[in-house]
Image 1: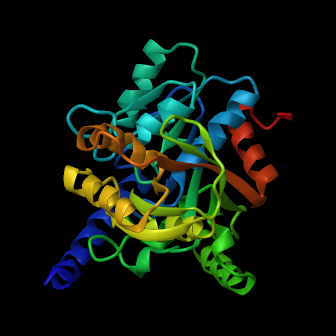
Image 2: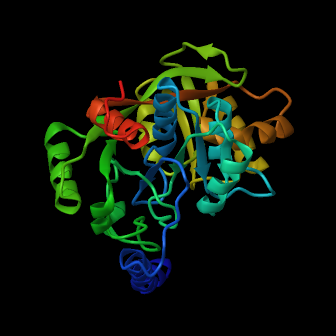
Length: 334
């Protein structure tokens, strides 16, 4: 029944997206300037492509060149006046203003008045938010599920047609280590057909370190863990986890899942049942889990989470130059 409903709704969703894009393409709807250079990081599909590590990388790149960036994001599924897990993580990891507002134009105006030191903006998840002008439009394609099963919402995971890649400045393939050489070549060809250029870069999500809930480093490769997550691409997380740990149980929920007491108690019970050393989750999930775990159990098992960074297999110089040229102009930005 749900699939039938999705089949019926998909053409209407696709038509509304086409009309909206046409309005921007023809100039019937206008984009507004942020009055400073804007770098957008987005995707074609719903969640799970690795935007947060990419945003962190770009912010660090800009800071390394003496710039003062801010981050604007929608704050997906933020509830009860909270900022949402992605914003909470960015605030924790980055020393820059992080503004949560679905209206990116209003957010940019707020930054201009409240943070005069800011001289460039990074948009998190804004490829479809065309109301604000951007100097660079980076689109991430997840190698493990590149085109969202080939269907648009609500039947598939595509927010718009893959033809939309034509308006991207550059395409970055994430989790490229999950495909072999031949599979990657085939994906590159598919991207080139739609973007008119091959991917500018291929990247992987490196687990640079594992930390616990006290922010102490963990060095226990091969330990038995229970995995608890609510993210857009749990399969990729589970695959990376299995390369380091023995997984006793897997508890996976939809992206940005609002964990409840039963979810947490189930993970704790599983850890006790299997003698697991810890519960393994993601940094974003931990933003939503920490208060719940403290409320449910007096002595929960340790919570471990990987610190994930974006590492380039190729194309780093091209992406760096693209971003820096947008801020400094075409002069040498080294």
